[in-house]
Image (tube, rainbow, N blue to C red; front, top):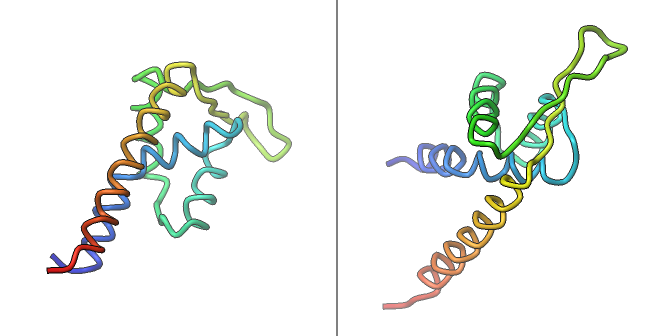
Amino acid sequence: MSTENFKIQIRKGLLEFCILQIISRDEVYTSDIIDELKNSKIIVVEGTVYPLLNRLKKSGYIQHVWRESDQGPPRKYYSITYEGTLHIKELIISWNELDASVKKLLKTKK
């Protein structure tokens, strides 16, 4: 596996976690999510984010409301649900455990 492929696979695996984390902080529009992911170097395209948002909505982790926009048609703004808050807490625990395990392995000398 190339280094680049490794980075791509890691980002894909963490995308749901990162999107939920962004939405958990405040109600957001899709382009805000994409911009924050790009600024964090988790580069994604809209075609990746929209299906994931739909899946998270179907799972009951997020919800959306339509809001009028001064810049065109109404926009869909996402917020986290109670179930989503519980789910992200579990994901944070899992991430911390995984992070600690990897750090431990990286420090291990043979």
